[in-house]
Image 1 (cartoon, rainbow over the protein chains, first blue to last red):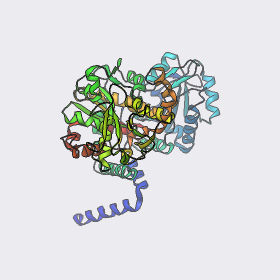
Image 2: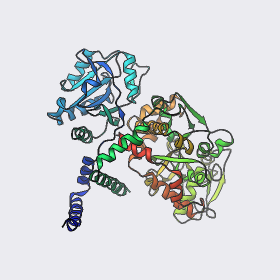
Image 3: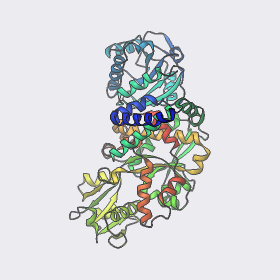
Image 4: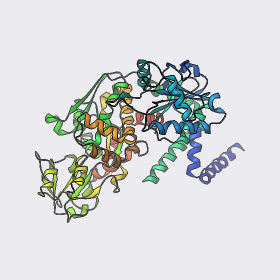
Length: 199
Length: 346
């Protein structure tokens, strides 16, 4: 009986895949494909928009998206933060409870906690689940480099920096990085949520 | 080709479904405890040597300098193509241990691979950097029959690509083309002076000729099939380095692929950096190049297809003795690329 049912199940599975179409198959595949475990995520101790000391370890048990911005950026930061705000809204009740965002400034000389708070508010960030962090220039430089991003001040006083958004799982392991600011928010959300399903 | 890529990705995804169904947790666990985690060790060596060439489409490896330092390389060197070994080309410089890694042209690199140089292809980086220019009455590759075509020297990269392109449409490159070896003068100069009928060139010469309205483009490898279906530049490393230093190799690859993404997302910044550091003279040409060349395809195109495609053509033409499958078996290593495709998204 079992022997007979195996080919039938395989057939049904193949027919289902054909009927589902490539897009659905891709989603199905993605949902079964765990994100790689790259390495322990670099820890940090920085200051939040409320003046509190924050470490990555504080978020243990939650999925964390770590990114780098600066508030006076007029080119590409205004693309990234609204996109993350959009994903924040898409995450519903999971945002804050199970998934958090951390935006670290790469311009600590100008981005005080108060400046970061105003920036966060202007983009509709829900601060119960989204921390905007600053720190000493040395601490910022260190965390930026350890996540694999580059930031340096140019002659105009603006910051040239690479955009790199990292997803860290509940155990503090770096799982995937997104380069640039125009990545697919749907894929980003799926990756965040996929980690909630892992045991 | 886009369909082929989609189908390939689909098959990869299906493979993962199979893996998940047949013990996906175990597979992932193995990945973490095995190669992946090992690759995240600090680099086994902190000096890295890359090629410095006037070809602007190698932008990612110049932009990667700071990213390489972040990856733990304290001494990042760019070595010019000078002396006898420099004239032999980037793959030979890698094989003879003058440099460790570089982007290089896909088809020409198969010749030193075939000759046994210890070089290993690690990834495709981008498509489409070469263009063929002809004067007014030349409108297609077929029109090159009986015409003078400038090349810097025999078996140079332009010679290799043009031999493949002309034979692809049925010409006999040894009889139908009047090859003009221009060295020490650049073919571009003789083309501008109308002393030759056609040339194949790379950025920034392609942008310059178009800007100056000299000749017209008769083949553009970023747009014209089949050339646009395959990588023109791939990342290659010294085989011994790759074998001895896997952590360093993965870190080099990550830095250069991140820099490749920067070429897509930050073309103006990349162009300015190229000019500031002396790798390019005109920012405008670099911006134009970065907007024209598909730098985003390194995740999607299969680099093995490129080696198979050019390898088959070159094997048929007697340019190499080894069949492509032998070159793929002995001179490629996609492990690091496959890991990074999953770790670094865009």
